[in-house]
Length: 233
Image 1 (cartoon, rainbow, N blue to C red):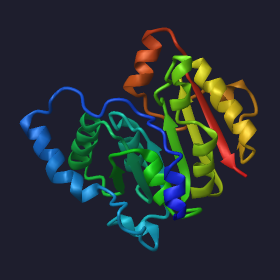
Image 2: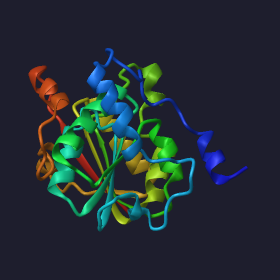
Image 3: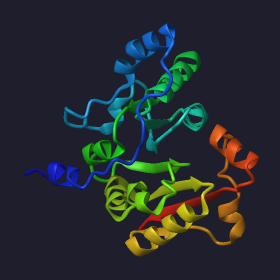
Image 4: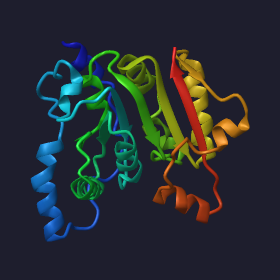
């Protein structure tokens, strides 16, 4: 059994539904036409160097898991054209929305994966990423579903393997129990250093942060957000 097969056995179902309302004809056509161009094929070995995934020169690699509508991902890609961004999102309605933004704004430094992020993480080479974003992930609020939260010992092991020394893991959520969960999991893992020096460091949004629809909903419902940054040690 290969290392990838062994790691694959630890995979959980961390996301819910794959599809929402039916796509309109032009949306379905965009998905069918553009997705193959930007989709990472994990049935083949990772290219060497991994940066050759992108048709433009990039100096750093950044992964966003569960990009939702893609507001943050497209914002960062345009803000940082010398960084190659990999976005993971199984929900096809969200994938279509991101592809529309890529097409409109001609963002060439983005590649995507449309299935379980753990599959992509297991495919990636050791020490290849500069940064991982996990922003407003599904909190799975019921205690019986907490095992489906993406932050776990197994997935932190995955993060630690693919991040470069000193690489960053950023986590944002408006759910207090998930924030506390993540702090405890990262503390207990031992491979990550929480960089906060005071409360302002984790209550203030990241530099250059674009507001997202999830964040706006949380504000409307009276919830504040936490922005945690961990460094691989």
